[in-house]
Length: 272
Image 1: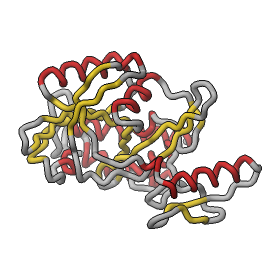
Image 2: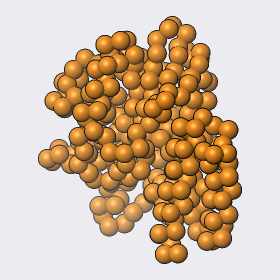
Image 3: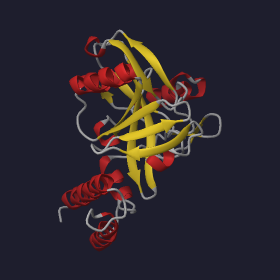
Image 4: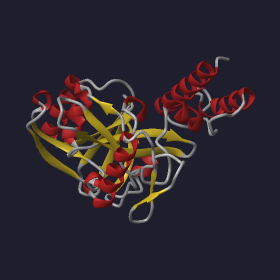
């Protein structure tokens, strides 16, 4: 992830802290701490980090493991932690997932449905990391994260307000409620009808399940044989095991842990 951050024009350097979070040094002298959250978000911890960062002028950016976020189109009641992040980042949550060439950052908006606390997860296009602004945001709701905080984000637009995106979503909902599903995919400027291929979010790909992500993490596609899965895991394990990896120890440990978790998930899902 540091490699992607150093590609931002306003960032002059990035390093991995001892506890695993990333520190982005900007040309203006501002520090931005980037936290990759791989477990359930606890608001108490968020508030502690935000308080400490805001007090000393450090912007905080929290990015959640995509596996912890409801799938695209899911009707859900987001937990307190996700709602807190949603408020901090102007009605969206940033997510990350590992791919064969590093990390991809996504964005999710929770659309209120007007009935109780239930909301629909709307996935946007993957983020092209070109900007890393920091700013103060006043959060009124939820009450658990109320306050004036110094945060950072990727400067992305409110994709859920784009007319073409809304049109595609509404069309998808109408078709599914009639008992027949017609699917749509993102083209250069609008949602296009592609029968039989699935409701696709921007970047022309289907929303991934946890199993899809596990295969992708090992550099495979869903349906690979047991031998292919085993061979891919062994190859990557030799590269990222903390005892042999050239990466910083904390990063190597985190990547190896995710590789092993993906391998075990595939093995469990296949019953082998």
